[in-house]
Length: 391
Image: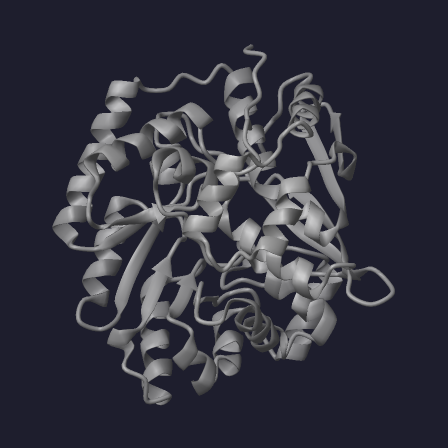
């Protein structure tokens, strides 16, 4: 197996991790959090997997923001102020924040520390787990030539659909090499309908716009601090306090979409450019979103839905056809761009499970629009459903 670092840049991460990190530093600098690895796909991990994973983590402690990377962020993300970029300049991963163990074919992983530090672990860790898994199981993929051909066919379909697309595929990519290959080809084709990539490092080296919204953990923490009923609303207001009208996409499914809409009042719906769909039936979601905007006397055609849930060309064609002349859809494609190479993609997540919003640890949960995507302590999930009157 190659002895190289799977993650070789501090910016090889999703854009929204940096924007959330900035917001956490500004608003919740002393909050501590715990994250947990969840093996949804029940994958069997090869012998010695945990030790090789730890080796990769140890190498990550050497990563630092370069001057060129800082200049890239200053130019492309002016809302990330110099105070934050000074922090990022000094930031280094601390592998002691991550505890990994292996029993037979199962791995366990916990991350613990100050939220503004631990927030950066999730995405690169998942990318490393994914790439290591394919290396150690000797997974056979299709050739680079076939990957390029497949990507070209997809781009041709998206061009015909007359839609806007982005790339969100860092966390479950087959490998860094494939991720770069696909993005490089998209950049070379330079389609006018491509809006950017969530990977900040590849955006930098390929001169692509970094894109992203915010993650579920942002809202999950707000529930621990302010209660389930108010979590969505206060999370959105705090986001606006930091970013104003920049980064104006709200996340709709942390505690199910009906609860989100109760919090998404006229003022917020007017300020935010649109909302992100990440679970449940996309057509039903679109219908409900349009209804909500109309109820608030807002023209849905002036708003966006960012679709990001397990997308492929057929699903995108179906959704875009329904959205036509109703609302503006954007499609941020993950695994179908970076891990459509033969072997099945991994079904793994790393989720925040606890936080200290005041003086003691509190379990944090995500309910989602579909049961399978809910995460966290079962008793807390039952309690949240009772509070939110969710059957």
